Amino acid sequence: MARSSPASPGAGARRVLIVDDEVDIRSTLRAAFGAAGYECRLAGNGREAVALFDRERVPLTVTDLAMPAMDGLELLRHVRERDSDAAVIMLTGAADVATAVASLKQGASDFIVKPVDLDQVLLSAERALERRQLLIERREHQALLEHRVAEATRDLSAALSELQATYRATLEALGSALATREVGTELHSRRVHAYSLAIARAHGVPESELEALGRGVLLHDIGKIGIADSILLKPGPLTPAEWAVMRTHPGLGRQLLERIPFLRDAIPVVYHHHERWDGTGYPEGLVGQAIPLGARIFAVADAFDALTVDRPYSTAMPMAAARKRIREASGTHFDPDVVASFLSVPLDVFEKALAACRPRSRRLT
Image (cartoon, rainbow, N blue to C red; front, top):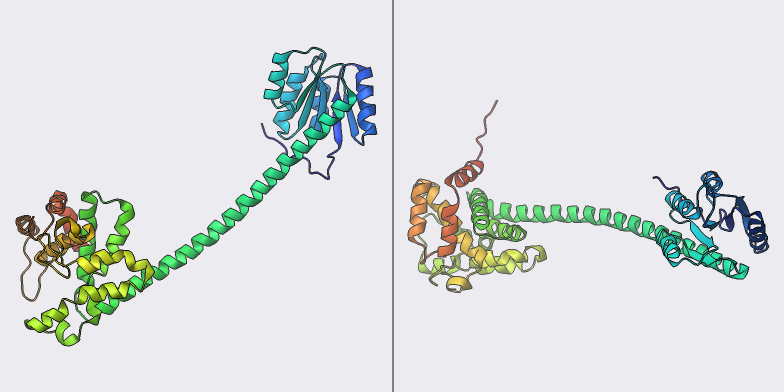
């Protein structure tokens, strides 16, 4: 049943509804409450009280328990259903513990045995109204707090969305910066990104960790920005000295990302993406599990891409043949467990990723 809004402190906070089938008791209570500054409303039974309460939501009800035409307990239920903040004091001629407990469980503020001490009744009324007011103020404070939290959440969400857009723009700008220097880098990164996430999911990597892995994959070669064009774009074989320079790009990438807080979680892949399971990789020659998992996953995805895409120095092989080649390097170049996860991914997943990352042809119309 719908409940009306409780009266505010300034709207009849000192009104009382007195309900008793005995005229003398109603009169006595009316005199006592009137002398204490209350506006009194009177009813001879529960039904009269409900009708009056429906017309005027009185904050305090003092009612007899045993009455004809709806007793005090039923009246209590009606009042509390209409106004959950209403204060109700029960009066009874019998000291029945079970009835007292039932009254209090149903929301009565107090239970007083007749003959009543008027001072006790007035004190109980004051306390009941104070509790009622505290409940109202607490609810209003809670509503205000929830409103402020909702506003702050909206503001925070907007700021977070803006920040995430900035992050994405930064990530794209870094990728584009390298792509302008080394042709094919962008598509390669997108393919390896798709392959890496597929392998990671098959390997059981939590979804919460995939975003950092993805950033590392997309930026794995970002350190090449610091490599001279004469080396990076050299068409022929590199000299030993040039190879030594080229092998510095993981460290250069780490140095760059350390300056960008939101990209620091990409460093494990960026710095270790040339490590090998058997320890023959670089820059640190890490062995086995010492290599970060993201870098181990990347190594498989990167090799798979290298084998399945045409390059100046090699022709693409079928994906099935490429998977066989990677299986053969399990335990030397690659983590055997990651290879097992890679092999569990259906080929059509990789085929769809490859198709999605192909450059789109442009036609003049």
